[in-house]
View (tube, helix red, strand yellow):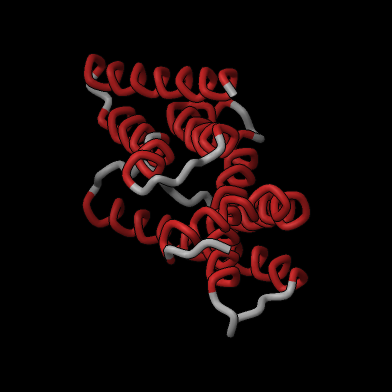
Length: 202
């Protein structure tokens, strides 16, 4: 447990360093990406403190790693390492899959009128992530239009149809990993969410 927390804190410190570098070097993109990434990595601690959701340190490390990889990519690794974008899409998709599964499973556990078979969750996770990926690509496309109209540099951009297809492939890979292996590890989280928000004990 201490190892996971140390790794999480280490990546958060690196994000703080990136924000400080952005201020010193006058790089707004580093400030924006580093700041937003840091806020997302603090979300598990906020949920644990404000909503009394005892999240496993591995989940916090999982989220922090996904955010950190994307932020590092935006800082220059996307252009230097060809497979970095694929890695970040798979990681981000796995986090999105985990969130979608946890929410749906919590509702399933709460309601006697709703029964979602285990096989359904496998398909649901894949569809959820693919839908999220489409929305994300549309968001990047909108940023491209805005950049062309204003001349501003956006933190995200599309790089052609081939890149969009590859992104969808690696999104599906991340979702597939969660659909196969993640359900057993996330059911306890869903049970905690159910008890916290619906106020019930089994």
